[in-house]
Image (cartoon, rainbow, N blue to C red):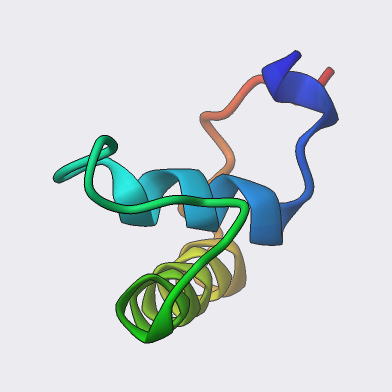
Length: 58
């Protein structure tokens, strides 16, 4: 279930979305790891600036 994902897991899934058949979240290569790190950094910025207030926290 999506609500059980950690931030790192969600970032890895988002990182492979451009081409999920080419990239693997479970066995992430350098590209996916770098992209996931950038996504997690952006997630932190969203939280830090309070832009996540509109999200439903369950």
